[in-house]
Length: 250
Image 1 (cartoon, rainbow, N blue to C red):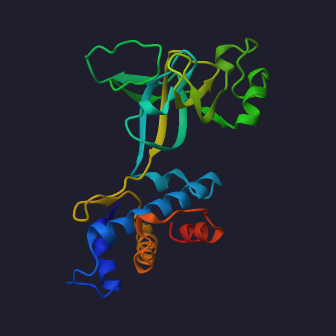
Image 2: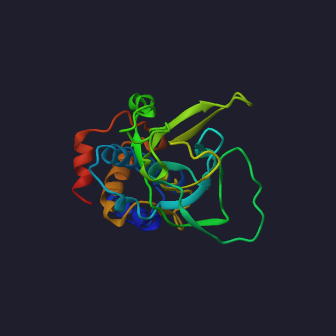
């Protein structure tokens, strides 16, 4: 991770503001650094979506957890222990180990199984887009086939990218991941990267990107401070030049 304090020192040096109060943490440095985090998050998301960077990039913010699916074979992203940036893998029917003797209330809703840890799995899930999701349901040759023509050992699982579904009971929308063949009310292990957290304190803040991205964050934060954009900036698009700049340092 990148030290916010070290980044501030470098910014103050570049701005020729060492020892002065011309630039303030709350009005200049913190907003600029957080705007840079937002920008780099957009760039990394675009590069990862194009398979230009691997999971190693997310090592400081990647997690695994065991979840119980609901009656529709879905997991709500709202039950994750932290904000989900991207799902990296889902393993159905995992081998787990209990780490708690406290009773867990059984529910038909999805929830995080804090009493279990993932050990291993023999099956994985293939990610599918919405256009191919319905077609795969009735095709025995497709991952995510949900018919009876295949025995259990030959099943190949798939999951649909997160979508907002409306709850039939509450009428509210929640972002959920659906899995097939349907492991209804059963365990799955999810591997995910959490969203990088904005810093609120310069002296203790840690920027949740690899050290190799220090110069990218530095240059963007310096640009924001120089032009007084700060946290009012908006990232409208990610250019190919942005992605190339990222790939050059990782």
